[in-house]
Amino acid sequence: MGAKPMPVPDADSRRFWEGCREHRLQIERCADCKTARFPPAALCPHCRSSRSEWVAASGRGTVFSWIVVRHPVPKDMYAGEVPYVVALVELEEGVRMPTNIVGCAPDAIRAGMPVEVVFDDVSADITLPRFRPQVPS
Amino acid sequence: MWTLRDKYAIAGIGTTKYSANSRTTVLNLALEACGAAAADAGIAVEEIDGVVSYHFGDSVPSIAVATGLGLPAARYAVEFSSGGNAANLIVQTAAAAIEAGLARNVLCFRAMNGRSGLRLGGSRDLNSRGITQYTAPFGWITYPQAMAMWCRRHMIKYGTTSEQLGAVAVACRRNAALNPRAMMREPITLADHQSSRMIVEPFRLLDICLESDGACAVLVTPAERARDLRRKPVYIRGAAYGGGPNQGDDLFDAIRWPEHAHNYAKYIAADLWASAGVGPQDMDVAEIYDCFTYSVLMQLEGFGFCKEGEGGAFVEDGNIDRGRKIPVNTHGGLLSEAYIHGLNHVIEAVEQLRGDAGSRQVAGAELALTTAGAMTCGSALVLRN
Ligand SMILES: [Zn+2]
Image (cartoon, rainbow over all chains, first blue to last red; front, side):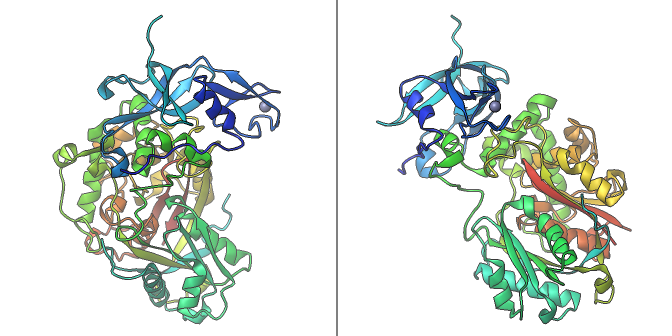
């Protein structure tokens, strides 16, 4: 069984992945025009400022689009995982993030469905932010 | 905007056999198709001084083709690191290079062992660096998986159905049945589409294009030169390349794309039609990039053959069939002829405009659209005879 791909944090993304490791979802935004961005990047594509700040995201969002992977590729990595759901989730902060939807039957997923982050410690160093249907509080 | 209307022409075309196993090298495929295009035009190989291609690290550099063909001086031997979105871009670039005096006669080619060698659809960068760190760790890895996300968005926004996608697959296969070059000629029905295995929802097996070994090449030359050559020239009337904002960090990445129910077509259509001085209603055939069934819907909408959101109903009503509103993918497309990454669409358009398409000829075809791309960026040509 091959090792699944794991994020390789870099200068732009280190803070994001460190936050996930601490079970905190953080989003980078421009310190000047306050536009949130994902993925993290050195420049604000809105005003080209290089000053940025990290803000705590609410961890809530909605399903923008999703797929259900039935045929595993690469097979040795995902044969035991299918079916699984990959979604683009629109966060309350206004950015979209690729993720998995867990804790929900694939056929029950709907566009616009409210979801919330759940952290999955997949290795000693890496935690992936996945999402599950929002539990009413 | 393209300002070279009708000043350049495709004077020759060449292909290899399309197969699941060429049993030869990609370089040999490229040389065979390029040599055939030069011979078809009736131009001496010594007169060719430009070679343009595109690939994903699965092909050979343009200088290798220049070397293999023995070009005395390749002044413009370049390639794009690109996907099928560049299939028409290379033709535009060839003409632009000639206009600028960088070359006189330019071969454009795409060669690949896409089934027996590196399979683009089956795998991708797994190292999870750069933009891939946000996608691959979630098991979002292959191109079918990337584009299924777009297709779903079209379904969400417009109510597009799997049966409507199936209409594209069935139409392409019906055309392929008339095409001796096509890899898949056995007719299929909508029921076959609906019972084909689910690969990545919403895509079934028959929503996904073929994987092929093969090569295509076209020779671009000034119009006045083309008129002195062996074959009837096919003029490059209009051209456009590009996309919208946030085309992404690579071809897979569409995290920041504003709305995945539309693709690049919506953004380049105005330039394309203005450059050509004609519109979708004037096209006799349209060879539309069909790596997946859904991409045909978004391009029919984006280029204005139907209204936004109506692509599903448009194909379901048979409007893309032969003899109807706009015959699409008269060769069978990437879905049923072969996956030569979109350059095979240009070959088909040229054959249609020459009147050489045999039993699949659209009678009296004078204007053809070719498109290339499915996601954030792409290219298109209007060709005429
Ligand atoms: Zn800013």
